[in-house]
Image (tube, rainbow, N blue to C red; front, side):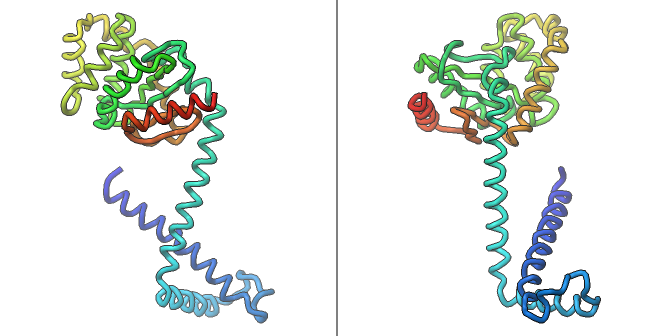
Length: 263
C-alpha cells in the first residue's frame, strides 16, 4: 500500500469518525421536546443545513471531543479484537500447537508450548533466535513450534519454501539458523547460496520446495495468521494468549512460568 493511499485511507476513516460524532451530537441537540418525536428523515434540507452548522460550531468550540471520541473508538476496537482473538485461539488450538508439518525446537513432547510466527526478513525475529535456542536447551518441558509466516514479500516466501524443503535433507535447523543469522536482507541468490553453504543438494532442494505439501502448509499457516489477526512478526502464542512483537528472554520465561502455573 502506497503512502498516498494510506493517507487517503486515513482521511476517509477520519471523515467517517467525524460523521459518526456529528450524528451523536445531532441526536443530543435534537432531543428537546420540540424535536424528540421527529425522525431525522423528516427534516427539510434547510433544517438539516442549520443543524449541521450548529454541530460544527459546537465541535469548533469543543475540539477535545474529537480526541475523546477517537480514544473511545480505538479502545472499543481493541476490546473487540481481543475478544475475537480469544475465540479464534480456542477454535484453532489444534493448528496452533499440533500441526504435524511445523518444525519444532526443544522437547517434541513438551507440555509447555510456545508458538512463534516469524519471517526470515524480520530483524526482530532474527534477535529472537538465540533466546529461543537457549530456552529450548534449558527448559526441558518446553516445545517451541515454528510457524513460517512470510509476510514481507516474495523473497520471504521463497526462503520459507527452501527452509521447509530442507527438512527432507534433514537440514531444517541449519537452514533456519543460517537465514536468521544473515546480516541484511535476503535475495533469491543469497537464499540458494546459503543453502549450498549449509550443505544441501540445491538441485534436489529446488525440486522439493515445489512439493504441494509445502505450498499447502504455507497457505494453511497464512490463513491461520489471518484468523488470529496477526499482522506482524514476530508474534508468540503461549497459554492461549498472543504476545505481538519481540520479547526479552525474561519476558518469555515469565510467560512460560505463568503457563506452568496454570497447568
